[in-house]
Length: 176
Image 1 (cartoon, rainbow, N blue to C red):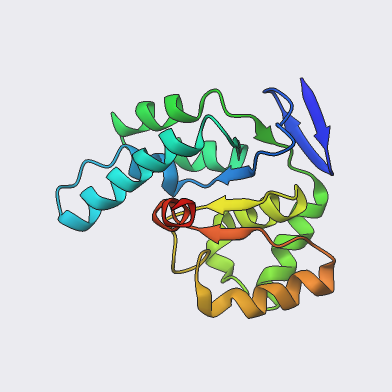
Image 2 (cartoon, rainbow, N blue to C red):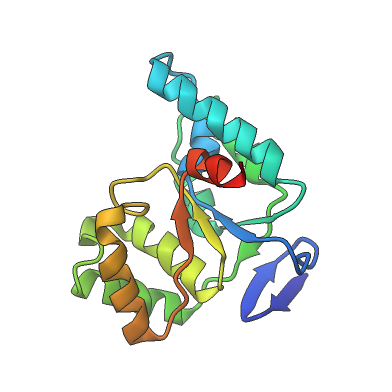
């Protein structure tokens, strides 16, 4: 099934609740949900991810993309199976030629390095589909406050919506 809501093209799932937020789930979210490293910072990130997932899941509409599934498919087992299972029921945002053009524009204007096509694609998908939030643990290239002004400038040029770029920890804190 394909849904259309406020410019959003989504494959699968139910129509979004009009008061819920549309949240793009980037690759690092299922990865940290199933994090197995024992360093305290990784344990904290895993716990915040799980708490946020349970808290936001019933009220907001989670979506992802084929780009996320392709990245997760490169994850070693058994984590790959767990991550793909977590995202299995999430509707997929439709990829279209405008996404590729936006990714190229990001790279040409130094918003993202050419080596990070996946990060640029996640941002372009979330922007084109009017996601309210792009949830990520990638604070270097996506949820980087130092890039936000540049991102807004690029999106103003392109006429694109800029989603909130946030980690599960930030989203949990915002709910308090």
